[in-house]
Amino acid sequence: MATSEMSFWDHLDVLRQVLFRVLGVWLVLAVGYFIAMPYLFDQVILAPCHNDFIFYQLLRDVGAYFNLSGDFFTQTFSVKLININLAAPFFIHMSTAFWMSVVTATPYLFYELWKFVSPALYPNERKGVKKALCLGSVMFFIGVAVGYFMVYPLTLRFLSSYQLSIAIENQISLNSYIDNFMMLVLCLGLAFELPLVTWLLSLLGIVHKDLLKKYRRHAIVLLVILAAVITPTGDPFTLTIVAIPLYLLYEFSIRMVKSKPTT
Image 1 (tube, helix red, strand yellow):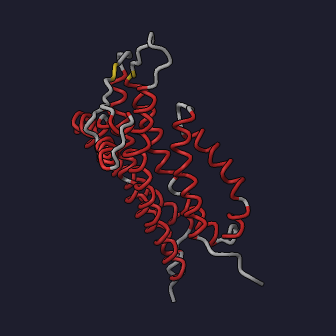
Image 2 (cartoon, helix red, strand yellow; image 1 turned 135 degrees about the vertical axis):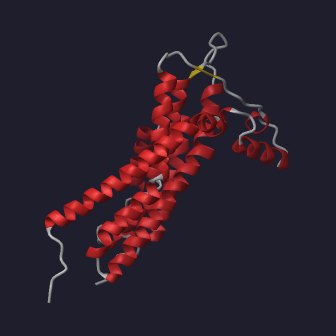
């Protein structure tokens, strides 16, 4: 009977085709985002600069419902950016289009990865890997959404209104805004893969529920360090805003994995 097994070079050729398709999708998306960037910049990326942003409206609604009079729930907020670098708008236009294409192409990347590895898996393994890739896509976009709708607006609102002295006027540059925006949103998307990574490690027998509970305090320290690495500003407020979701993800990971099997 003829064998259907592929040689090393056959696998390499298939991988090359996968890479070309992924790069092709990224390129098409990047060109599309580059063309639409003026609209996207005003309506999406700069949206947290305006008082009518959905998260600020939510804070005002919560304040009105519970009769909260603090500035955090009643303050009118807006930020005007300045540009001090001649070439910054052009390069930011290009880099933002590229990173947005990377983010939105993530499900297709996972799909191509699934097509590449699935023929080599047993039926029960295919089910687990397919579940993992689907979960990874969902968790990544949840992380991006949390970063965009909550973490970054809170960070921007706190830092832009923080005043060291009345003699100092806060003026936020375009470069600073974009660097913080991209870093927080993308890193939170990656950080939300923590439950998936933990679940995969548990399938390999490397971690289990009891182990995660035992080293919870050590994990908190590591998560705070990770939050400090993620946050580009390094201020305690932003660090706390990032560290709390990471800790909640760790607790979620504990509930996802199984206990150590008894012998």
